[in-house]
Image (cartoon, rainbow, N blue to C red; front, side):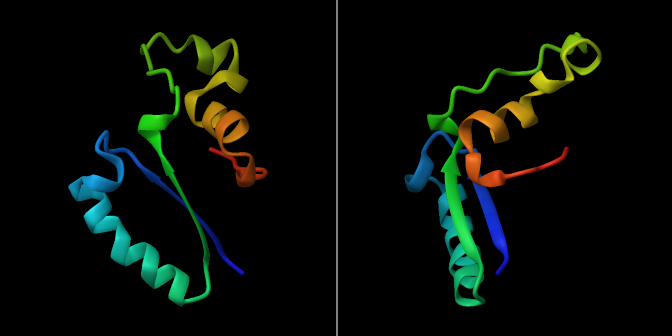
Length: 81
C-alpha cells in the first residue's frame, strides 16, 4: 500500500481554496487504495528559514523539513530530504 502525506499550507485550513483543490486529489488517492494522511501547517509550530545556513552546516538535524518529520509527523518514518 502506498502512503501519502498531504500538508495543507493554507491558514484557512479546510475552509480555504487550497482544501477545495486538495480534496478531489485526496479522494482519488484513497479510491486508488492509498493511505492518505492530511496535516495542516497552520496547526504546526514550524520555524521559518532565516537564511543563515547555520542549521545546514552546523546542525543538519535541525533543518526545518527534518524537524517537521521527526517531531510533528511520526508516521513519516525514515524520510530523507
